[in-house]
Length: 104
Image 1: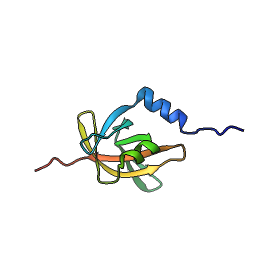
Image 2 (image 1 turned 45 degrees about the horizontal axis):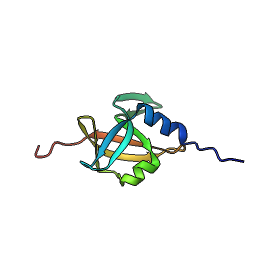
Image 3 (image 1 turned 180 degrees about the vertical axis):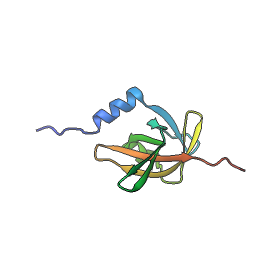
Image 4 (image 1 turned 90 degrees about the vertical axis):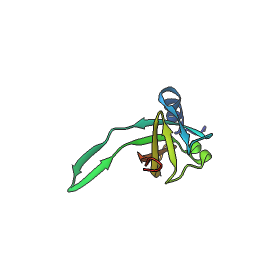
C-alpha cells in the first residue's frame, strides 16, 4: 500500500499562493504564506492575540535553520520570529512581530 504524503497539499498551496521570504538578510529564502491580520478575541475568559503569522513547509524551515529570534523579510517588511510551531501536516506556523529598527 502506498504512503499518503500529507505535506503535498501544503507544498502545492505554497507554490501557487506563497511568496519568497528572506531569512536573516539572505541569501537563504523560504516560501511562505503570510497572514498579517491581527485579532484579539475573548475566549473562555482569556484574550487570544494572533497575527502576523507565516506558514511554511517544515523541511524548508529546517533547511534554512530559521529559529526564534531570527529575522524574516517578506516583501518590504522585516519581521522578528517570535515562535515556530510544527503542525501535523508537514507545515510550520511562524509567529511574527515587526522587527525593531536598528539604531532606534
